[in-house]
Image: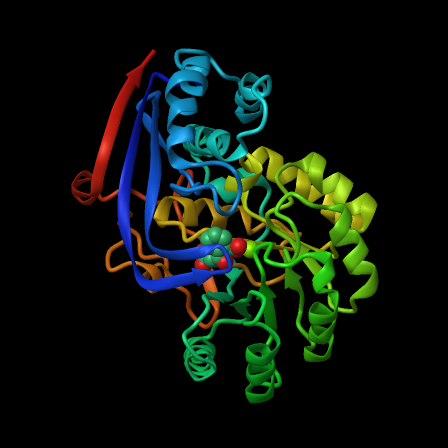
Length: 368
Ligand code: OSB
Ligand code: MG
């Protein structure tokens, strides 16, 4: 497959809700959107980096620079045998997995369309629907949290994840656990704690959480391994799993008993397949993470989440939760806690071009 041209855009999409985490408040997403053109087909990719490096280090503007000046020139006009060929072309450049993932994932879409197959089949998926949970931001009060949990359970979400931070953790989780004793409940700290917070974290053991996500440093494995030895609750790694190498080391250290896969954090589908294989052989359950993706990123996540290792509900909630209007024609909506994987070749979704045009703040067309 030869990539003949690319179109890179930055656009802004307002969220329907205020999403508060331990690292900040989001009210809109700034989205790096890539369209790749080749053999009369189009491949789509969506970045998950934010304007500010508050989740991991990468930023929208940093990724835009790398894609424009480094990664796209490296692959435009070249005949690439398969997505692994593209991954090899980007391999000399260190780090920046989120920026690489935009291009790598768009190429998987293009490649699958060239084969005339849905992406999930090309990736090795085994189902056409994905179990979903919901990630709820920090609410103003415990009462608001209880209402939000009740509403989302009634909508069929199969796991409730609450964002926590020091001072907004045990009490709110305990209230939810008491009100909903049977719910599958988890907590995501986004790196807000240190090992010195051990007594506070240890109290969470009595609440029977399915796991606690990324309690410690965003790039840490060693302290997570120490903490995991002292906690009954499984630790799930998110931020710290930035590559398959990190996943291998996390397994060796015992830094977590559950992994969250976000292909756009890991560098793309190829790297995610490697983490999937490592986790399968180590007996580590996986679930599909989310970064408030619009339709393109959400579709990619859904296709990958059909692999056999994804045994826990993912953060791939209905698009209508997040947006008044999504960037794609297809409605990505869950029914009874299950999201259908979009049908058709590639990721199976199509951009609403007039809407994309209207939301675009910057764009550039690059050809071979
Ligand atoms: O840590 O999983 C996270 C959103 C933005 C950045 C990081 C995270 C999240 C979420 C939201 O938890 C998941 C979603 O609904 O997309
Ligand atoms: Mg997380």
